[in-house]
Image 1: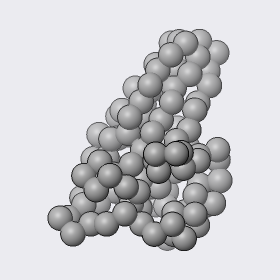
Image 2: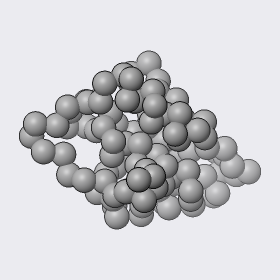
Image 3: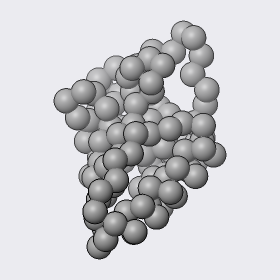
Length: 107
């Protein structure tokens, strides 16, 4: 099943971050400019013509994140919205992170 057809699931107490081989495969499936940064988080910069469009995008991401119950870190500046995603309670990457990234990419 495609990542975009899945929904984020609550992480249980025994959740673990994904092995590197799986994150590498899922990153290839995203195939739209996402990277895994030095802090092992999904990272992407979105660029816009002005501040208002960057803020509009950030608000759409916020609504999507609420629906999925999975919340990225957003940094908004003039013409740019930086998105970082990871599963906070395990301080690593899970399938939820890739699901959310896929859905953000479709906004």
